Structure formats: C-alpha cells, structure tokens
Image (tube, rainbow, N blue to C red; front, side):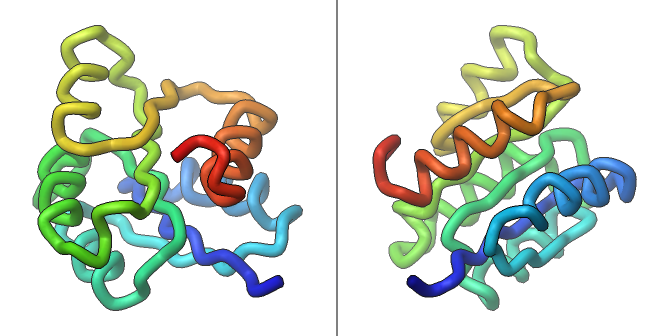
Length: 126
C-alpha cells in the first residue's frame, strides 16, 4: 500500500513538532507549511492526501486557505481538518463554510487526531 502524504500547516513550530511526533508512528510522508500562502503553494505542489490546517496564521488565515484549496478541482475531495484553538461556534461554522472536512480544537489528544486521520485516509469519513 503506498504511503499517504499529509500536509501539516501551523505557524507554531511546537505544534508542528507535536503533530510530527504523533504521525511519525504511522507510515506517512509529512510536508509542512508555516503560513497561509505557503500552505496553498505546498498543497498545489505536493497534492497531499490530507491536510491539517491551523486557523490563525500570518499572510492568510486557515479559512481563506481552505477556500483557495477547494477552488481547485483536483483538491475538492482532499480531507482538510482544521486544528485550532478557536473552538467557538462561529469559528467552527466558518471552518465548515470554507470547506473543511472536520474540526479539532487544541489541545487535542493524539488518539483523537490519529483516529480522525485514519478514518479520512481509509475513506470511512468521506
């Protein structure tokens, strides 16, 4: 079975390191981006199988990134999971309105993150 590629997007090096530590246990190819515009560039260049996307970032926020990625026909079905501290109802609504597939609030458990990722990559959650 080919390795799945995951794009990790967060302006916090600590969060990226934590996500890498959790996901290194699986057989994933991990690609990172540290701001919104880099996230869009990486998404189109790398064609990941799944994207973990922060909301509050420099250059472009996660909602804008999600909308931009969804505009591309080849990226419409790629699962995008928002991973953010912004768990307020209006932010969750904005996330889904921008095209995200799921929404996780920080701090998250490694089990929660892995379970969601695995279900999307297995095709169960689509």
